[in-house]
Amino acid sequence: MLLPAGAAPDARLLLIGRALRAFTDGFVAILLPVYLLTLGLGKWEVGLISTATLLGSALATVAVGQWGHRFPQRRLLLAAAWLMAATGLLLAGLGGIGAFWPLLIVAFVGTMNPSSGDVSVFLPLEHARLAESAHGEARTFLFARYTFVGALCAATGSLATAIPQVLTDAGLAQLDALRLMFVAYGLTGVLIFVLYRALPDHRMHEQAASPEPLGPSRGIVIKLAALFSVDAFAGGLIVNTLLALWLFERFDLSLAAAGQFFFWAGLLSAGSQLAAPWVARHIGLINTMVFTHIPSSVCLVLAAFADSLPVALALLFLRSALSQMDVPTRSAFVMAVVTPAERAAAASFTAVPRSLAAAASPAIGGALFAAGWLALPLVACGLLKIAYDVALWRAFRKYEEPSS
Image 1 (cartoon, helix red, strand yellow):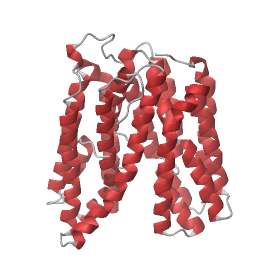
Image 2 (cartoon, helix red, strand yellow):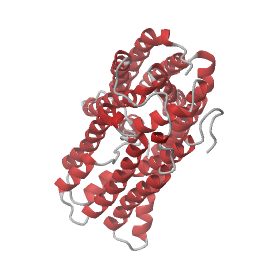
Image 3 (cartoon, rainbow, N blue to C red):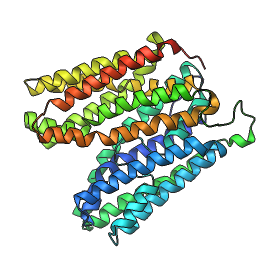
Image 4 (cartoon, one colour):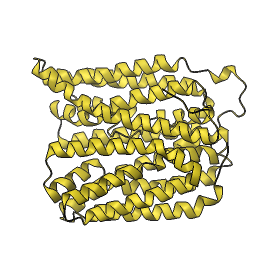
């Protein structure tokens, strides 16, 4: 994988690791409920297990932020890789008995991700290492590569959901075919462990600053975490599952057509993240985050009232091309406004509230759809995101532009 000029060579290992994890997350996010239902669990139990994965990841990320500074980051990354391996292999093994409580415990303790986005304990650790691998503008480009690789590989991984059907058609039992996919997830953890063993061990070098818990930057991080939570809560009102439901209900879109829409929308989102550093170079990190995000939210609100499918899809495609440009710039900004020693903690404390807020709002969006208010989740999402952007710009424009 090509690195931006000025990035340390070991950043390539982090990009490859992100690609591998995103690919497996891409199919696991779709296969996990299918697997659990095939085991004979009910929808309520599937929901509990999905919630346990999010809650466990959030608590693990908090732990990294609070106590991770006591351990070398490389050791924590290797431990996370082993945990990923154990998660996949245990879930595959427990499929033989189908017991709810063991599955719930593994989901809570493990690294399983019920969404295609990254909510795992890997995130703050990899962000901190990436921030050390580049400075200034090169850091923004590096985070753009990181998020682009994740988005692209997650979209590609979703295509792997066809593998169990191919295996079933070849004569393998459906449950066994699904279990093999979780074995593949676990083996990917082993591969990432081998990959991250090649990372430099920072204990062997003198560092400018050893990792520490939040200190001088605590106020900034808390304010950012609060604002990011508003953004995440708004996004949860219209996650892809609910957006698909809206397209089905509003325009009677077929399942095949919806799949094609989300594939191309995902590619647009991934591509836009590569463009974000070039935009940030000219207008700054905060301006890129805000002034690409607001138009995307306006497109979502307009799509809610579109009279025809082509108009709605055009607006949603335009939204996809703009809405994720804030992801790499947001990560780069957080890493730049805190001290180097606080970066792992800052990544954790800004990621956890986002995960929890995003997990809370899909139920509200679903309830609004069930009540017949099809446009309201889209409108509420758009307006909340615009309010977030304005608040972010007013609060942090004075920090523009960090240079290290």
